[in-house]
Image 1 (cartoon, rainbow, N blue to C red):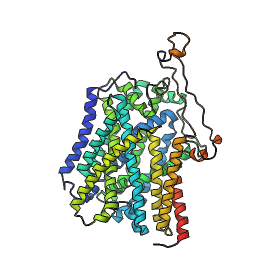
Image 2: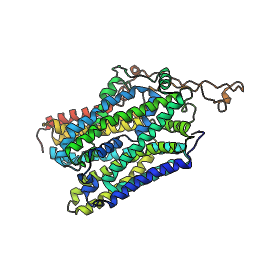
Image 3: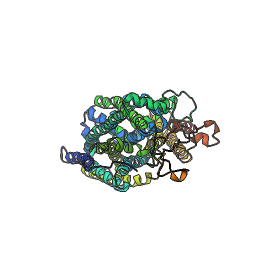
Image 4: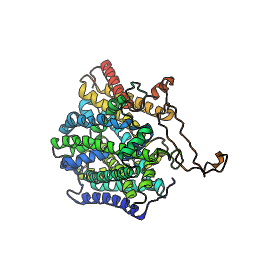
Amino acid sequence: MASDHQFSVVDYVVFAGMLLISAGIGVYHACAGGKQKSTREFLMADKSMQFLPVAVSVLASFFSASTLLGTPAEIYQFGTMYWISVFSAVMAPLTGAFLFGPMFYNLKVVSVFEYLELRFHSKTVRLFGAFIFLLRATLGMGIVLYGPSTALSAVTEIPVWVIIVCVGAVCTFYTTMGGMKAVIWTDVFQTLVMIAGMLAVFIQGCINSGGIAEIWRISDRGGRISFFDFNPDPHIRHSFWTLIVGIYFVWLPPYTVDQQMVQRFASTKSLKHAKWALLLNIPGMFIIITLCSVTGLALYSHYADCDPLKNKDISNPNQLLPYFVLDILGHLQGLPGLFVSSLFSGALSSVSSMLNSLAAVTWEDFLKLKYSHLPDEKAAIITKGLVFIYGCLGVGVAFLVKELGGTVLQASLTFNGAAGAPLVGLFILGACFTSANWLGAFVGGMFGLGFGMWLSIGAYITKPLDFQLPTSTDGCNITSNMSSLMMSSTTTPVSIMSTYSPSDPSKLESLEKLYGLSYIWFSLLGILSTVIIGLIVSLITGNIY
């Protein structure tokens, strides 16, 4: 990546300070209280947490570096339509607070999948649900670790693999040492860093562009301002209907049946605290999505006449925001470090939550079935070992994610929707349909998972439609690397407009019509297919146990 500015010593100090404070919180909770010697304390924070830190922790877990990097890139490339998703997304915490959350809290389950065995009288369904979660969380760790690692590598001389290993090691360390309390309190600290970093970028972006009004004017001129596309065609990438109806089902899994949410919900002092923890996510979601979206507009207004992607200054959309930060904050020592710290805070908070939940599910749903005779103190040691193992696995998956293309936001939303949808379907079958039996739930879940993954992989590989908006390099001084294309040695900048041909869904044929559906609908399709197939199989097989 070309840039006039690089990371300074102060930036490295700020970034290292964030990592050391996070590790320090883990060490503190390893030595304080019960010293993480029981599974209740290690996995459930001894059910002693107040609603406010839990609320912030839940928010931090589900808004990773994928959001901080991906949302501004989304706005830059595709416009502001994505922002209106916030009005539908906030309905997911409401659903969790008043429907699913109280059910799990009153059952006093450690693993959310215990419910499936209680409801369907089947270990098969329980283990199947747990397996989907393990797959989803393990791959999810790779996505959220890779995003900020490639961003930091782009602004420093440090290789991506070194960053992935170092950050993964720090996260694994404090999660292993301090358990759920360390996870929650580091989430609180890291959320403050996330918001501070993004605010610094947006404020400086406004100053450089001449204010919010000027940013809006430039963005509108570039076709980025669009909120109300009522086209009912489900192939449209982002329309009013996909973002108001479809996005709700994307956010439904993490806020209703996700192990990370259920563990935090259960770690609170009372059901009242648990409900407030989720309800406070509503303003939190609005603030973070809005802040990332307006930062995307500031990003576009700065590069409206010189797209760094077209000008080959950067190699992928995930580097847009880091490149922007070096451009506008590179001369202010410490602020680039704060921004990178905010990205890694998002990654650390998400990965630490996944690690703790992966350990909980592996112990409660698999190992405990065979080793239930072990004393709780030994079980706590085993869960700590599981955190370490999954931490190493997450680092390995991050290297595989390097091969993915596109923005990390779409990769994250697409995969999480495909893998999380059948879980929601299983719990809907159990909670809403008394006629559903274990075989129907199992077959429906298998079908929903297979169908969702097939859709996601097919769409990701074929990319039948492209709705990216046009960009320009009119303002770039590119004569030095384009001289072979010029007939004279003039120093006048060459105008290179990106080729822009809006995709036409009507030209899709056969499977392309299915793959061409907006990726946001995949989650809803996965839920519906799980429930429908589950009910059909249950109707055919009757009451079997």
